[in-house]
Structures are given as C-alpha cells and as structure tokens.
Image (cartoon, rainbow, N blue to C red; front, side, top):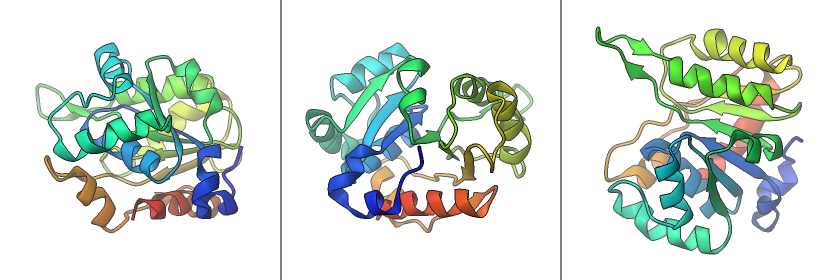
Amino acid sequence: MKTSREDLNDVNKRSKNVITVVGCGRRGLTTACILAEAGFNVICLDVNQYVVERIQKAIVPFDEPELKEILPKIVKAKLLRATSNFEDAIPYSDTIFVMVPAILDERGRPDYSLLERACRNIGLILHPGTLIIVGSPLSPGTTESLLKETLETASGLKAGKDFGLAYSPAWILRGATINELKENPIVLGAIDEDSYRRAEEILTTFS
C-alpha cells in the first residue's frame, strides 16, 4: 500500500503508516527512533535476538545517550516495537528501510552477503506497492545492481513498477546520531520519479 501525502503531512495520521527498519545497529535504531518520534508506526527488525529483546524493553543495546532518552518514550507510546521474524514485519509494511551494514573481508573489500541475505528475505514476502529505502552506505551502483536484482528475483516483482526503490545513505557520528540524521542534507537517489518522491516525503519528516 502506498503512503499518501496527506497522511505524511498530518502528524496525527502518520501512525497509520507502518515502517520497518531492517538492521537495528547504531544507524538503524537511530533512524527507527526518529521515524517513531515523528509519529510513524515503526517495527525494528533484527536477526540478533539480544538486540530485539533490549529494544522491546526500551533499552538501547549500545552506548548512545540521545537514544536512551527517546526510546522509552516511543516504546511506551506503542509507536515502536521489535522483532526478529521477517514475517511479523515485512508483509505489513508500507515502507522498508534497509540498514544492514556491509562488512569488510580479510582483504579490506566490502562484503555485502549479510545485506544480500536480508534483501532476499524481504523479497520472499514483499507485497506490491511497498517502498524500499536502502540506507546503508554502499559502493556506487550496488543498490541498482546487486540489491535490486536480489529483491526482484526473490519477489518476482519489478522495481519501479511493482515496488519502489530508493537509496539514501545515513552517515552518522558516534554520540551525535540524532543531530547528524536530522541536520545533514538529504542524499537521495531512486530508480524512478515515484520512488524518489515517496522517499523524499518520508525523509523530510526527519527535520
């Protein structure tokens, strides 16, 4: 289901829109908290059960002072919850932020296997109309080549036709995560105009 512009502009209606954040490390959880604070209904999806359990208890699983103040409020308001099960989140999502990090192999080259696996799991239960925003910093062309192909193969759907696909890398500094994401200029690319417009409308709620 596509998120309507009316619902995005009306803070009281944003909770009708379900946003799943896949990968809830520092970058992912910060994004999730900002979205929930803006009024969206947010699901944190992470395969690490420890991370999920901490978030469910409104405990930040790493040292980040700003998040420690925000997380308890949005969990109490039932604007954010966490799960490790893709089937508990992806089928119900209007928008999906993919925040799974790339890791470096022993030669210092980027290894996208975790990110590719996450996209495959998303694709298997992806429904038409969903917008996917890749927020992990990646090498140029990775979203449109590797991730787009993985999502399309797993889902049987076409990016730009059946689902939206955009790329907006989130660059943050330890200890200043909220301010970084809220104040930094938005860097955004998308596979088509509709994906760009929809992603931009969501990202502008950060400020």
